[in-house]
Image 1 (cartoon, rainbow, N blue to C red):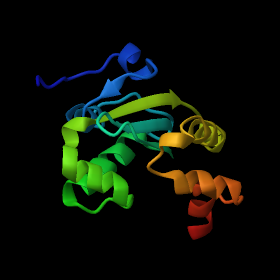
Image 2: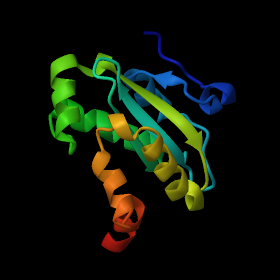
Image 3: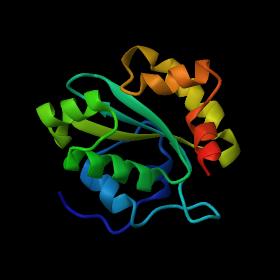
Image 4: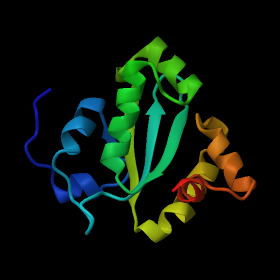
Length: 145
């Protein structure tokens, strides 16, 4: 794969565009940034073989997705089933999709919406269950600080 120096705004903002793990690594180095120097929004990691997905919200999408890649490669991903699929199918079977960009105040709303939308094929179904119990992932992070 040829390395890219720059990514166009169209590429970054086109919804449902799939990225390979190599592209995520490169994109994280040169991205459109918010006032804090980060891309905020909702992302999806989908396994093409099992058709399961992970939905996440982050104040720094590229860094978060790179964290997923690193943890999978190290065999230390917190989602056991996702790690098993990585071990079985490899990184080539995973695709990384930026679903939408949004402000920090909208992260929780859109994450819940996308978790609901994909509830029958989530790796991180516990995140959705957390919403039902009234404690979102983002709220838990705030409590931990």
